[in-house]
Amino acid sequence: MEIRVSDLAKRSDDKEYPYESTGVRQAADPIQLDTGDTFKGTLHYVAEFLPALALKGVKFESRPNELQQVADSDENGGDVFAAVDSTPPVPEGITAKQPFGTDEMETPDAPEAPEDHTDAGSVHTAHTNLESAEDVQELTEMTRDALLNQQSGIIVFNILSGQLARKARVQVLLDGAYWPAVSTIKSRSTSACWDHVGEGFIRELDFSQVWLRLDENNNDDEKDNIIAEWRGDAKAFLRETLVCK
Image 1 (cartoon, rainbow, N blue to C red):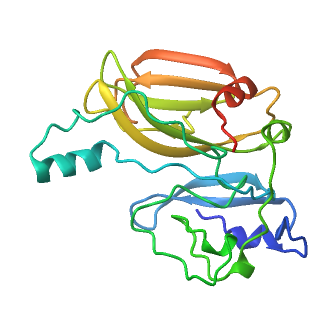
Image 2 (image 1 turned 90 degrees about the vertical axis):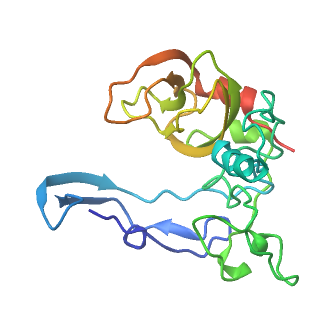
């Protein structure tokens, strides 16, 4: 089944919030299997579009992940993990993406913006092609403390690297959810370099929790084999990891 954003949102005259909700949608749609036109059951759900601010100066520093290092090693004949840095640099800017901001992680093959574009119009994302500066909402400057006073929004994780006792993948769960909001691939060695970006939704920051786990299994169909975990308050977690200019 598919849910179209155009059914949930419409243009608004607010420069900070260029789209607004069309209202809460309650629906019941048939569940289509991946193979063929077979349907199995009906999903009853409620959906609503919630607008958010776009923040100025939001980005992640790009660095090669393990797969890119493998490709470079094959070309150069070097050791894949010899150059892995276990203490990566802290990324500049607020480490959050949409809807807190419209910038996403810069990619090396992203086309350069024309010189006559504004800063907002020169933003490139992996999921959206921005046709003109008029299509981009005005970016808002917000201090670290002001951001932490917001109760709900998208939290974006930039999982960089680490030294592990055993090869594993990182899972991030929010508010005791059964399924991870973010999951990396299993590391190829104990010197892991994921450089993985994923996101989840914080419903109420003052009461939400973040749960980090290391799972030895790399298949979602297999039972998790958790070898290490950490759980803490989402607000304290953000206060320690969020970096503002």
